[in-house]
Image (cartoon, rainbow, N blue to C red; front, side, top):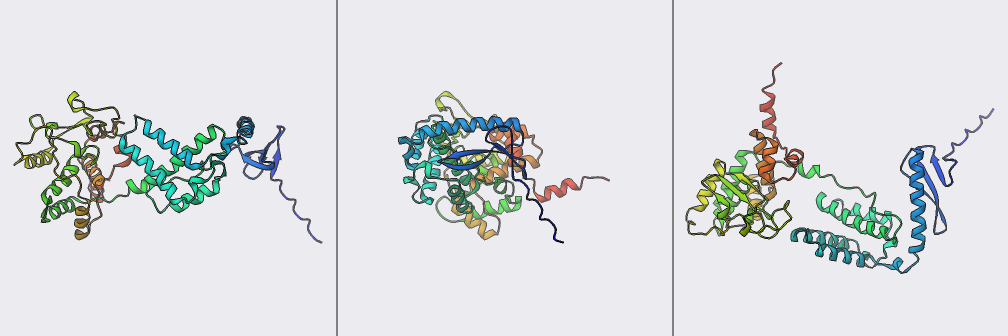
Length: 379
């Protein structure tokens, strides 16, 4: 005798509210709606009926508004025009630093360069699948920071388009972001011996600026300053040899990364200061020799960039590649290893959150330090 076929489980469970259904598998509530004459099922992203009813009312309101706007002239607005308007807004925003404006514009250039034809595509024609496919291609091509900023840039475009009713949904809403942990927490820093060998190797290179390049590396490692927005702008007037302080002002007009208001040296304003510890003071005294005639407005650093020299030295010594920002990691790590409180270390670094950044992103205690700490355990 043949068994009766099992009754198929009902997928949609109708509620007493019009157009509101619950998925029997996931128990998530959905709205049954009509878009361009076609029936669509839209997830309301909740398993609570009261929340689902609220989301459904919002959805129906947006649909009614979009139906009247999308049929107008705005429906043909191209991506290129919207991006151009966004760039103009960035240019006009006085609270954004010049370097940040440049970076934001580069994000849009990268998007248009890699998404052929996007510039002439109407906003309403771009769908979720196209966006996900695009960013899947970009996943390995760009760093996490650049990738995430490209996602946010495009997401912001559609957010504004949605606000004025040109599009109904934001197709970038569910695009996955890259984790920054792989770039910050897994960085392998050099040991003390490797660092000294690196500086010695760069110093030994015969040619223009050899010694100055080594001094740049040590200055970045002994201060933890950001290379472009802080270190390059330090002048002899910012060094107080008597009281053992280094004053950090940043760019003469735009200040440092975390100080967006105008900073003019004539007003005596500064971002933060850090003490001249032994190695740093020795370095500065060494750099001052033969340059005593230089005035307070002269830059301390004679060389502002030496990445190629660092690359060559790292390759020759067989140590992980270092960048100027890695020396900021190195400085913070030395502070942690020597027991400097995070709040104090954050102040020296110029963080605006009391050392939370240092604690979250730069707590790089190396393997040998773990072994030293473990040796103190008593059972």
